[in-house]
Amino acid sequence: MQPDDADRNPQRADRTDHHVARWLPVLPELDADVEGAVTRMLVVTKHLRRVREESLVGFGLQKHEYDTLHALAGRRGSARPSELVDDLAMAPASVTGRLEALERRGFVLRTPSRTDRRRVDVELTQDGWAAWRAAIDVVGREEERLLAVLDPAERRQLSDLLRRIALLAESGGAGTGCESSASGPEGASGPEGAGGTESAGGAG
Image 1 (spheres, rainbow, N blue to C red):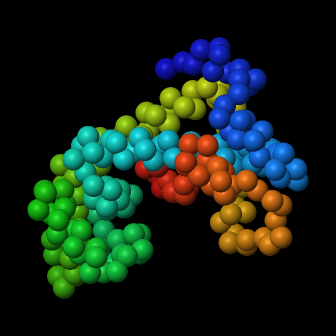
Image 2 (cartoon, rainbow, N blue to C red):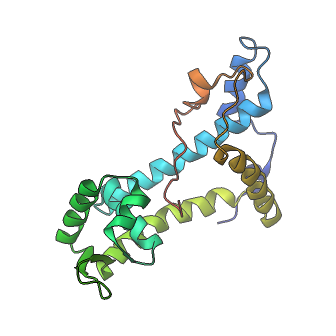
Image 3 (cartoon, rainbow, N blue to C red):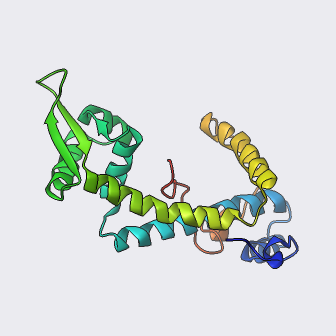
């Protein structure tokens, strides 16, 4: 889907512009570009999360079921339970409970390992693959629709810029004495109430 010319007009004001304008008189030291960029990232993240949640309802999946299928798909459809424990950052008993429920739905199959009969391997069934793919495709199409407002060079530049920010965030160093931010009232919530930055369901 190609965006119209209006979608490419950088002068169009969005809700974040109004958010920044509202808080600048209250926090004169607020960096409008920083606040605008962070708030827009949260708005897009929240939007994609909502799309994912709606798609899961449509496919009869709960979020924890999708997360488990996603972890298995990321390991090419087969994993040891201990690997899923690491991937999902959950207790072994909780992962076992998830796998039992998914097995009852016909989405996974637990079988003795081919290399170690004392071990159990977990595999996605054909129905499991289909359920995961159907759900993730909905989010993928929406991601493509949103980024269609940028041309290929702009998308590459955006990805490169975000990589630089992500690398700093992944370094784990949180600065102190940062500049004031309006991210409390509407930034962290975003003008649309965006909260958190977890992956909306792509390759996360």
